[in-house]
Image (cartoon, rainbow, N blue to C red; front, side, top):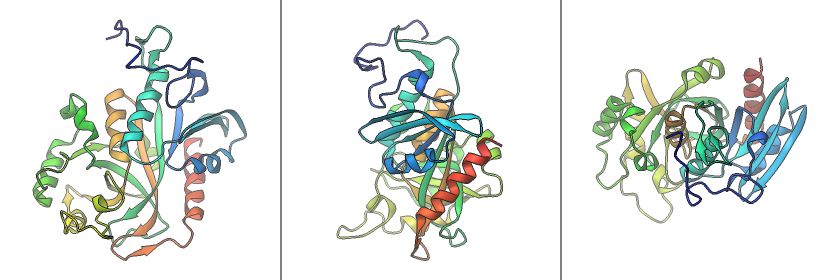
Length: 292
């Protein structure tokens, strides 16, 4: 694989030498990358930096790279959904593990730390609005990882089987997968925080059990998710990116973790009065733990 030249059509490089979607060049990326969905949240993170070295933007992908507590950190907006995560993780990996000039994989690979700072809705009564939650596992309802080979190498097969049996997973839905978070990041960043399986949905409304004007194909899905348990793990929340982040990172050798601000409780039907305050507290917590 190290000698294979990747064709122009598979690895698209801009005329200035940057990677296609992110428009980043290798020297503009730090080894620690904070991922946020909202492009407007990038500056909410980088305002804490002592200095900003690079600011790059293209479409919904905005990157600021700077220094916090003497550590170089990048913060990058991904937009919403696992399809965007597919772009982001593959292009971040290409920046550090592929020689963009020769279009060949490097013989020595680098492992990035990819930490998603997200917002999410709780599926458990004891996980309150405006609290923080770390994703010990990512449950993929999206199907993205099924397009990549060697899925059995990265998924928690027995947990997936138990999930399918418990929920009576409907034929025709994407085949689910479950991938574990980085043990290293879980230990350093998740200390003292509630943790659980994060269900990654391919949409905000029907795939998360919301009903507006279209009835659901699986009306009792959320109840089945809430009641699922496997070896002390339970499904704690919904969001739209973690499963792909964990799966692609594990395939490529990167450390990945998601921490979410809980802005809604789906069981209590409550919503944060000002979730931006909670998100700011989460940002400060993660920056300080990363650089302690």
